[in-house]
View (tube, rainbow, N blue to C red):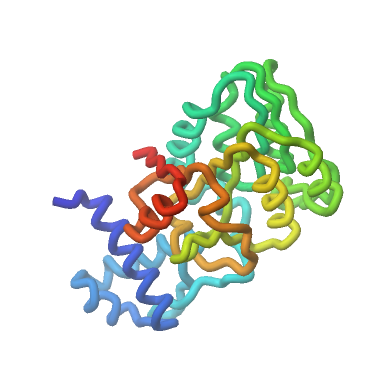
Length: 258
């Protein structure tokens, strides 16, 4: 028997999938389809809208924007517990004396916090927040990318940042993205940010992708890459079955923080 949490998450995934197919559905239609109350669907839609997985409208729900991410301050708190669990799991798989790329994102920032007790890390990042967090670890050496600083979230992008990543070959690239489509494509919202992440993919011996459950099926405009380019996906709940199948086909591990 499914727990209440699992039942809610399965229904949330179903709502996102159905809205993606139809474009817009009323609250009443969703309640009837899933056999729950209107009040339950309203709560579901509020949660999904806060995660950026769909857009809330008067009387219904529609497709989420594929061209604009939710605000950084909101992203910091959305699914925070899930991100912290993912980060803790990742930290277990990062050895001492490792070299790391870490990109822009609130989940990768949690990974930086989880790595604070690690010994002799070399971190190369274009995330000002990650650099600040990791600077608290006296046993960590940090290389910060140059380029254009994005004030709202501490991201550093542009050609100098991309070129810096190309100068290194790191043991592990730790990356976050904004959305994963049904074919295993990895997507984000900002081209400059994506160019940096693609440089990380090219220059990492292994790539750990960090994505909580809200990223599955979430639309975003710019393609980062595919599952074939990662070593492992770290997430907080079992993903849709087809995602597990795709990971298995390319030999990427699935790590669930639970």
